[in-house]
Length: 90
Image (tube, rainbow, N blue to C red; front, side, top):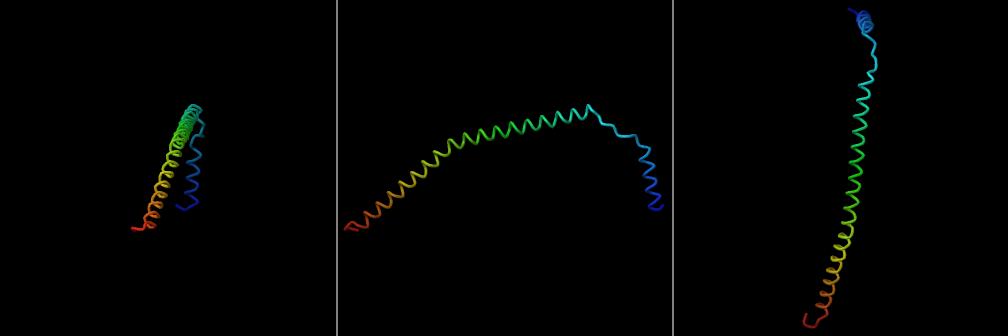
């Protein structure tokens, strides 16, 4: 069998196949599933955004507070060191 003969056989086989028709019910069902999945994704993203915003409103003041405490401890340690170095008993 040559390549030409195999192509002819394939063409004959394809010619005997019934034409493909769109299945409206299946297409509608697929569209509904896709739209539902997209809606779930949107709700999930919106929920994540609101949770992130809530976390940011809590974490920002906490971070500023921790930074301020660190600065106070650092400045206090500097003052104690300066006083100890300047004291005559040191």
